[in-house]
Length: 85
Image (cartoon, rainbow, N blue to C red; front, side):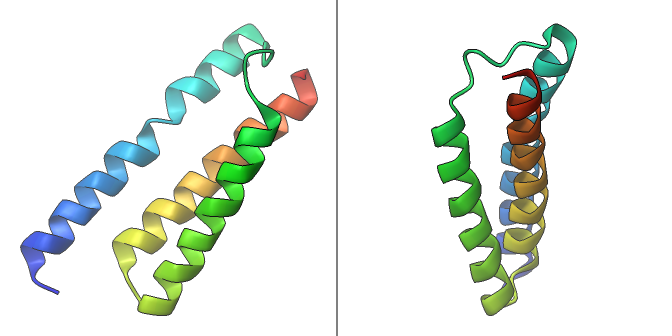
C-alpha cells in the first residue's frame, strides 16, 4: 500500500484510539461509571477484537495497532465499570 495511505490510516488510528483516554481519566478521577453502558462497551470490545483479527489476517499494521490499543483501553473501561459499577 502506498506510504501516504498508510500514514492516513495511522493518523486516524492514533486519533480514534486516544479518544478513549479522557473517558478513563474521568472514571478514575470520579470513580463513577453510572453513565457508562456495560452492554455497549462489551459489544464494542467484541467488535474491536474482530477488527484486530481482521488486521492480523490482512497484515495491516495501522489496523492491528489501533485496534489492539483500543481493545486494551475498552477492556480497562470495562474493568473500571465492574469495579466502580
